[in-house]
Length: 48
Length: 309
Image 1: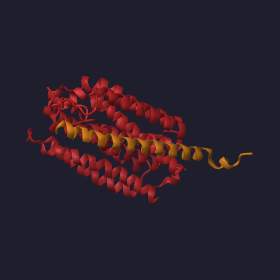
Image 2 (image 1 turned 120 degrees about the vertical axis):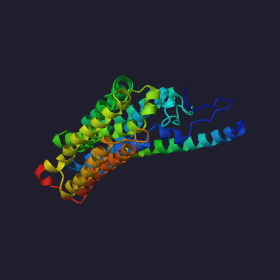
Image 3 (image 1 turned 30 degrees about the horizontal axis):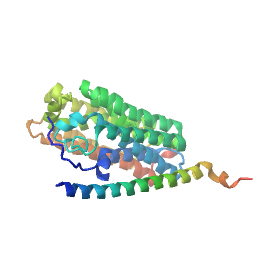
Image 4 (image 1 turned 135 degrees about the horizontal axis):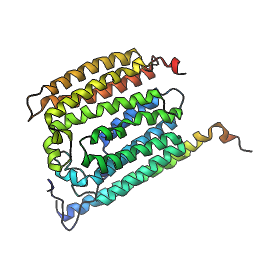
């Protein structure tokens, strides 16, 4: 594998890593939101 | 000397998503998720589906974090063993320090999430599991005693108790029995592997039982631990938290396990070790079938849970 191949490979991997990281962070945000709802239970709608 | 050459040209390949995934030891992680799931399912009581998913996610991430930390601290050993030489750190695709940061951050995140969203007992057990695997087993026992995998096996045995604690908030006799099954299963399982990989361990200077005590002694100890394991494997049925499906499965698998361990005891081919290779796979099947039977019984609701409620 020469330098050009490695540069192409690295660019592709950086993009893939960024996408996976974004998906993980998005998933965590959603999970934290939903778990907060679960922990609050039915009382979430009982706000004055 | 390392078995593989690390690429040292002007432009280096960066680590791929697959390399980070490999750092999490996905095969070990799948067994941990499975046994943790069994604890979660078998435990009496109710847990919200999303909470169950979160608990399993925390167990999985903690197992992965432990794997990454193990690979980071053991990268010198991994580089000289054929079985592990192609892991991301010895291959030079991920730096050891990067793996350490990755592993410790995932550890903190998984324990914190477990504490915040599930309960403190399961979080504490999760933290203890990581500590035991990384500090007690990897950093201390693995390089210093032939009993490394016997004592260190506790960390791999705890996931059912964590799953149980996630549902009930306590640890009773039933999850301790499940932990004991995995704890006593670990020596025959790993020593079977060590028998046919003993040269690898000897080259790396890891004091595994066949390297330190010899193969004959290891065969006897495998057999002794098998005799200890089999009644414990039947205990869930005897104690009433497993039913007839589990009893039948455990009985059949125990007979197969005993047969494979007996063949290892009388093995004459100390080079290829065919009996040890077979026992290694039989042991995996044994654990899988036992826990699958527990899960299946709970799911089809034929286990006598009335006694626990």
